[in-house]
Amino acid sequence: MSVLRAIFCFFYEILFGCSHSHLTRIFTLQEETYRVCLDCGVHLPYSSDTMRPLRARELRRLKAARAGELKILPSALSSPALQAVERKSGAA
Ligand SMILES: [Zn+2]
Image 1 (cartoon, rainbow, N blue to C red):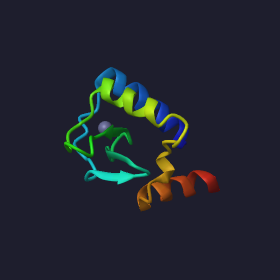
Image 2: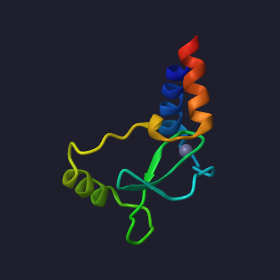
Image 3: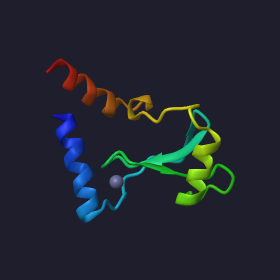
C-alpha cells in the first residue's frame, strides 16, 4: 500500500501541490542539508552555508559535484514513523 500511497502523493503534488507545512527541522545527513515534509516525504534541499532553500540550479550544481557519491533514500531517515510504515508494508 505504501507504493500506491507514494504514487497518489506524487500525483496529488502535481495537481494540488503540497503546502509543506509539516516539516522537520533543517538537518544534515551524509553531507546533504535539507528538511523533509512529513506529509509527502519530499526533500527540500537547503544550503548549509546560508540555511536557505536551494534553488534548482544550485541543487544541480551540488549534485553534479557529488555525482555518484550518495544516494537519497527516504529510509535513510531514522524516523520512527517512516520505519513503522515500512515494517507494516513489509509484513503484509
Ligand atoms: Zn509536502
